[in-house]
Length: 544
Ligand code: ZN
Ligand code: CA
Image (cartoon, rainbow, N blue to C red; front, side):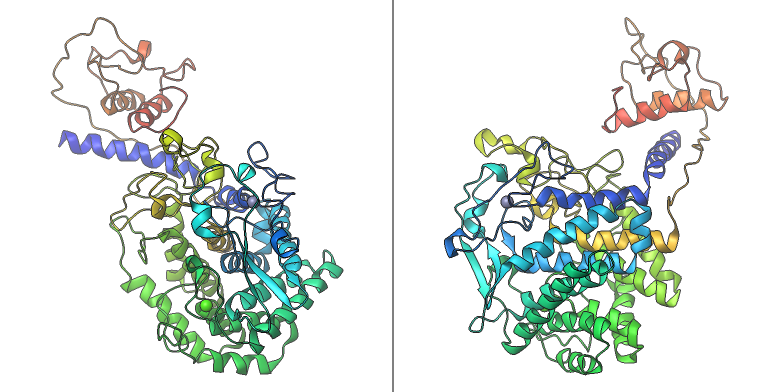
C-alpha cells in the first residue's frame, strides 16, 4: 500500500513536468527550425539557427556532370540528397503552410518555413537543366561509410540519378511538381515572379512525369512501389490552381491502377501518407474539395482502421512499422486533423492529440521524442553533423555534441521502449520526411485545439504519510536533498518534502528546513520535491 502511494505521488510529480512542457507553439517552431540542420551547399550556414556547427558543404555537387547541383537538403543522419524524400517533404511542408497559415504565423515559424521551402525549390529549379531533371546526388553505400561532419566530407561524390525522355521517374517528378505548385500557392503574394517560375516548372515536371511513365531509378533506399499516386498528387495541386476538371477524371483513372504491391489506392488504404505513398493525401484533399463519396469512404475506412484496428502500444502509440514509427503517426495525425476540420468528428481530433502528446512526452518513458523540447529527450540521435564525432574509438557513441533542436527521432518500439543508441537507427535516426507530417499535425492541432494545450496548473499532491518507516541509521552528516538521512536521495525524500508542503506531519528525524532546499532559493517547497524526483529519474537539472 505504501509503495503504491509513493508510486502514485511519483507519477504525479513526473506528470507535472510534462504538463508544464506541453506548449505546441514551441514544438511547432522547433520542428520547423530542424530543417536548418540538414541544409546542404555553399549557403548551408547562412541564416542557420545551427550556425555554430553547420556551414558550407558539398560545394562541388554536380561537377561530375558539368552542372551546379549544390544546395538542397541532406536526407537524414547521412548526407545523400535523395529526390523522393526531398520532394515529399517540400510538398507536405507546403501543404501544412497552405492549410494552417495562421497557426504557423502565431508560432512565429512563417519566416523560417518560407525560407526552408525556398531552399528546397531553389534546388529543384537548378536541378532542371535542359530536358533533364537531376534527383539524386551522392551514393548511399559510400556515404554511409563516412561518419563525420558534412563540412569535412570529400565533395567528390557522384550525380547518381536523373530523368529525361529516356529515363522515367514519374514518382519523383510528380512529387516535385506538387511541391512547386504548393510553393506557387504559398508564395504568389510574396513574390509573384518567383511563384510563377515555380508553377512553370511544376507544369513542366508534371508533363514529363505523364509522358514517360515509370518509377525512378534512384537508389534502393528510396525505391518507390507506386507512381500513379504521385502523379495524382501533382494533378491535385494543379487542379487547385487551374480548376481543370479533366485533371479530376485523370486522377480517378490513375488511382485505380495497382501499385507494385498489388494495392489499388481507390479500393482501400490502411497505410498513411509517406514518401512512397501519396494515395491517402490525394484522397483526403480531393475528397474534401469535391465531396466525392468514393474518396470519402476510403478516407473514413483508413481513419477507422487507424483509430480502432491498428496495433497500439500499452502507452497508446499507434504502431504501423518498426522503422521511424512516429513519422507515420505524425502524418496520419495531419490527415486526421484536416478531416476533423471538415467534419467536426471529435474522435479524429482526440486521435491526433493522443499521438502528438505521446511524441512530446506523455508516454511511459516520459521522454520527448522531439529533441530540445521538454526536459528529457533523446541524446544519441543518428545524425552525423549533430553527433560531431567520428567512428574512431567508438566516439560517435557518446552523446551528441550538438543539440539538433526540433528533430523528431524514429521513436520507440511496440512496447514503448526507446533505445537511445546512435547505432540503432530505426529508433534514433532523424530525417526530412519524419518532421514534415509533424509540422502539419502540430499546426493542425493548434488550429483546432488552441495554443498552449495544458495550462500550467499548481501541482496537486495529496500524499498520505509514510508510516512505519524504520528510523534510519544516522549517517555521519546530512547531505542536501537526503532529508530523512538514510544515505540516499530518492523519491522518499521528494515525498517527505511534498508531505510537509501540504501540511502533513513528517517524522522528527526529517530535517527539510536545513537540507531540503535543493535550488537554494530560501524556501523548502514543492519545487524542491520536484527537483529531487527529477534527479532521481535521471532528468537533467542543474541541482543534481
Ligand atoms: Zn552537404
Ligand atoms: Ca508513390
